Length: 382
Length: 78
Image (cartoon, rainbow over all chains, first blue to last red; front, side):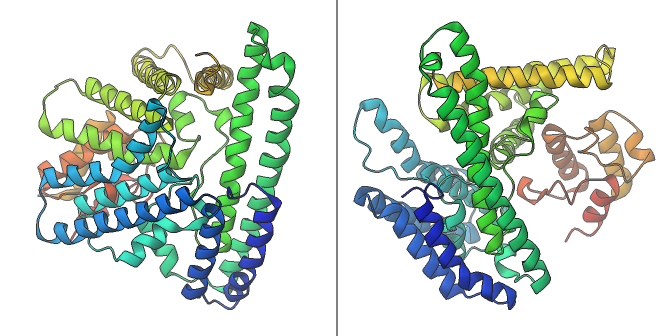
């Protein structure tokens, strides 16, 4: 069963949350009950497909051994090649899963949420390598990896942030507020996902006119699909964040009014934020740092642009190894690089001054550039 | 080595403005003075000039948001 997709899921979840809420008001948290709830939900999600369940278990064992081994290795030594091998081994299950469809093989090893779990594992390895994380107990790793509210599609939390929330029990007042915000978010999720996204899909996208491939239909589809994508995913995210809050964990936000972005950089600070921040911190910044230290390329802008290409290419491929995802990534890399160039020139020449009119024009241009990106992403064009 | 002066010199060079020296409580990220690229330059500069290694994972935008905050973190770096 896919989380947050049916009344049945919400019903079971609601019952399971009651003891957590009662304990929350008493400023208590039962790790045993938390574990029990996780077991029930995870079984519910994976049990209908034995391949998924087995893959999931093997995957968790694989990542546990790998990360725990690296924890003990890192206490003694810190060789670069060992780190790179660990990263490759961590990404391998996801990579194989993404490759299988290319060979038209039935996907027996994939399971719901594998890509989001991989982000978390890679993150832990990099933090250990950096020394930002000195110790990491197996139970901490599992609690972070298996946290059920976000297991299927994020938001992608950070280990240190998550750990802090797990170790602090909110006071009665704090918990009352978390519960209130959590329930609010869940109802926002109902509105977004089950009403707005559903209506856009049912009344626009699935109509015979839009399904017909005329230029006008594709044009309307572009906007409808962009809005659908937002309301569907922001709705899901609201569920995941809301349930996290009810469990006392402040899972980070994923969306912040992305369609009023003033430029493409602003957009990536507002759209699927937990993913874009992950790529920013763990791919782009590390690439730039690596290149700055090696001093192979003198031009700092060239380094930055290569970083953007790497980031968006990886982000594209991560969605799936298909042409339209790769083009989607390259398209966004091109947008960001063009904007960066524009921004720099504008700093010198001041031809695009900051005022209300330019702000509105900027928002309109960004909105259209973004929607065209989603049209590529949808796979309708090629 | 004076942490305060070094950090301010670095910030002035990276942000390409002396505002950072005049207003030590300016929000570097919110004002668009510092971005991910600038952050990396800052971390490399801190390591070269002060010998303090700060990993990217240890750099939290909220805690490192103003010149004053950066200086105080580095002055108390263990």
